[in-house]
Length: 447
Ligand code: PHE
Ligand code: NA
Image (cartoon, rainbow, N blue to C red):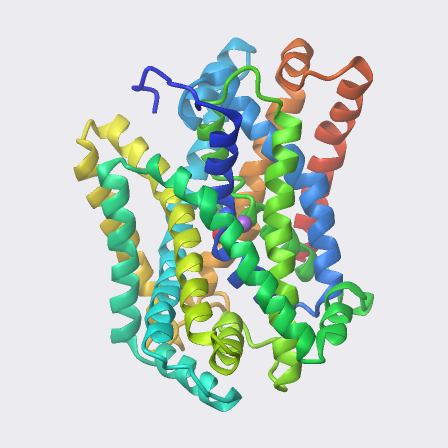
């Protein structure tokens, strides 16, 4: 990115779409709902919302600020800013660990993106129509147990990502996101309506918002914080890179609010769509990563117009997954281009294949390598846990601490466009609330 003459986003709208394109993805629908189900519902949801507001929002603003001040890729921006402020260039580690996280996340993200592609095809050919709960569970179990199918779809998804990034046509996708995002929301609303009609909406509502605090423990809180980072694409330098294209006139706080409200609304809608189906069909909320792939086909397979709606839904989900996946591969490719002076296409193919290989290991953990575990986790869970619960929070912590403690007050004032009182409030949150929150959750979760 540093090589470009640093063109800026044509408008705030384009920037919001790019940031939302990265944020809104499988995390909102697949990962959020399965974690809610796994972690006992409302207690998780409320802690998650608190993490988004008290940690996610300041870290998002901090990452954009570093990018806009530094005007370079995440690593170089950190080095430059650290030098300017008389700090150690070791701060660049924050940028580097972000790139590592992006690389690891994409490997398993692509496996799930493949599931979504497979289910798009399944909707077209009517695989789900008329299925009951046992039927859809069997279909899902059949896919998981079949490494060839998983490999095929993971490869297809990764090929799409590599193709798009290699051609450098990622910008064209933002305009597509403009119509896809509302369409996704409308489909989710239809599903929520279906849930209301099922008569089990009240149960779902209670499950998601009436906390049973006894379900809360350090592990759940850490999972909620990890999800806050994951869903907002934080702790990977992605938002830093985007920030470097951000015009001076764009208000960081209000833009962050827009992106966060959109991302959170989509996650909550997904939950409100999925849990009525779970309860109406006597499925288990703690089903795990398969949750949306057993509940949604059940709804689409049995509602009027379900074939078309199912096709549209999984297509939109795949598209949302693609825009997120692209934003994950981009920083890896850019770093390779700059460090090795490989041409873009080579850098994309090399990093894409490496990610793909790691993804193969992840998908085998659903079948042939199911018994292979490290610290009690299979490869898929290990990649997911190490990134969301450790790397992302640590990198995000680095970003917020750097902005809060190393940047000059004038810079912060100029960046945020706040009054003196506003800056003081920001300082309290950025210096104490957010970092202490991350560290506390971290410690609680690891013991
Ligand atoms: N935020 C995306 C989602 O919720 C996933 C993602 C994570 C994308 C990290 C980019 C970087 O699906
Ligand atoms: Na998200």
